Image 1 (cartoon, one colour):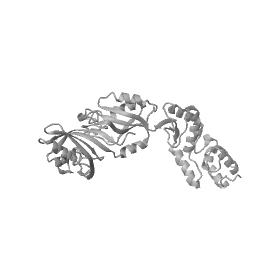
Image 2 (cartoon, rainbow, N blue to C red):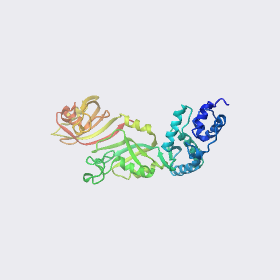
Image 3 (cartoon, rainbow, N blue to C red):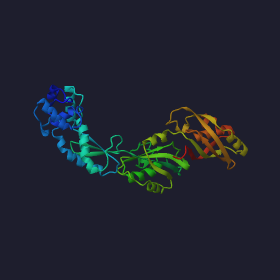
Image 4 (cartoon, rainbow, N blue to C red):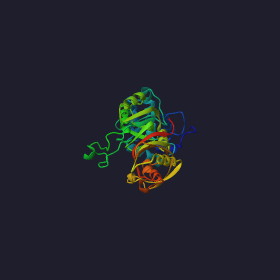
Length: 404
């Protein structure tokens, strides 16, 4: 008997379960090298002196492996219908087979086995490979073809496509992302005209809907480096974002064409599109760049040019205590946050109107810095000027993290 062989008594007991050579060999798959499970099983059976069982009569697989070519054809047909750089095969088996297999492992105390799913994945993949003409990838496959061996039906799990870029929001009437209706929560109602949305479009949808069609995907997700209020514009070089397309059946899309089609909109524009990966989502969402804003401010009374400029000059590297604003306290935790104003410049535009350009720490509530928010932001520009003020227009003019 060869050194790798299992104990004869154990081998005979396992073979007595009514297993074919392939299934018997799989019970000891980690013993011996350089052979297939059916060869291993035949050698074990011969050494144990037990009778041969053909695959169709096998108490475990019931001849399942006779359909390998059928499974491989089904996998190849589905995989060849999508674009990917690589693929991987997965499988589902009848739960009764999986339960019976585990019972055999437990009954005989086996620890060198391979599951029937693992062998099916490998053998179907080997048979399908010549028909697919792209490599197998185990760590990060772009296309996983899972075949249900009960029905020879294949489902595809396609890894997302990620596209990074920057956007300009030119409208004061659209949000950054899809905003479900507050009344029906996306189901459709009279309030939203059956759309399920508070706003008919968004920065996300303008490019996402185009990308979804081009990539033949299922859904789009938008990951921005922060966001601006609906009534604020985002100008300058724009705000960094990552667009995620799930289940894309096409991957080789010309991003210049995507950019051109999305930029037909007058509501938003998109710049510097390029392919990226999932890690960019985390980097984008966790970045905390400073922001530069330009706001138009209206005061409750006439203002003095020198006083406005002096008030602006007083805010250089000044820390604020900002309690969660009244306007968002219904959806944000009531906290007091420390935020910094790096600098402020002012220009008087009229008797009671002026503009401020300012750079702030990420997460600063600019409207509340100007107004004071009924004492919830200290210090404030209104407090420094001695006149109550409010922002009438706000634009983000720079996200100061550098172009990537």
